[in-house]
Length: 282
Ligand SMILES: NC(=O)c1ccc[n+]([C@@H]2O[C@H](COP(=O)([O-])OP(=O)(O)OC[C@H]3O[C@@H](n4cnc5c(N)ncnc54)[C@H](OP(=O)(O)O)[C@@H]3O)[C@@H](O)[C@H]2O)c1
Image 1 (cartoon, rainbow, N blue to C red):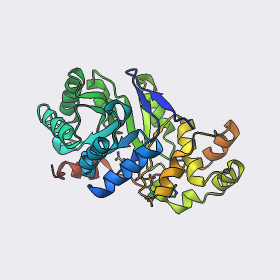
Image 2 (spheres, rainbow, N blue to C red):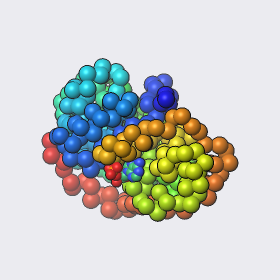
Image 3 (cartoon, rainbow, N blue to C red):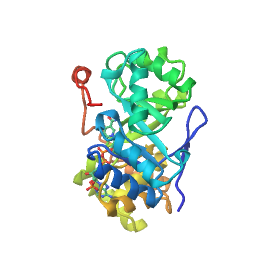
Image 4 (cartoon, helix red, strand yellow):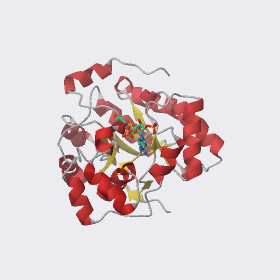
């Protein structure tokens, strides 16, 4: 079983699949989830300052005995740390929390606040090697503004994406920058309706895989990066067991019928403005 990689627009190779740690409490739970994942062969963790478990991720990395360069760490800056000069301080704090001297992929978590000032500091962090690749998350209305002001074009854009909302329009918008798409809510946040879709059940029987595995393989075939969250050891193993089969063009056309053009979670720009107030604890 060998996992796949995506080549980013800066030439770096990122493991396409990983573990997302949103809503996993810091400390024992995050450390255990990451260590279990590393034992199975996972080499990519997606965290954020806002998840408040970067310390657990850093501790797991240290305890794993893996070399730093063997693991891909993505984390995200919250709008309260955006701004030239301010973001540089935020990045240094992240490095401390993660117990590392570089971050593989650093994202702007939301499209509000002084994201252009933040981007300038992120570009400087790339120049001095504190960050390898930079990208964005949840950008839509302010995407073109960011792109117009960016010297380094985003390596990745992380947004909600699953068969009910495959994000093909956004991918077209990003094509000319070579920006890859990262799927959040890849399993619809565990939604039973999605996991029990008859088309997915048929494919599940055809390949002897669960519907969750069919969905995760769909993300891989779509060329997206995907990092489902789980703390359940069975799901952890199951989710990674998707590299010994592939979906045919016909299968992909069947799954395309599930596109409802509908997200589970939509924050309007006004609601996102609210994010400027909230401050994660250091
Ligand atoms: N940038 C952003 O704004 C943003 C927003 C949301 C998420 N994210 C990232 O995306 C990651 C994934 O998103 P998510 O955690 O919200 O949603 P998700 O991965 O789509 O779904 C997680 C849910 O699915 C369940 N699950 C996992 N594997 C399963 C399986 N094989 N069979 C059945 N159920 C399964 C999990 O429960 P168990 O734990 O019981 O397995 C959990 O309840 C996050 O952890 C985070 O890293 C980013």
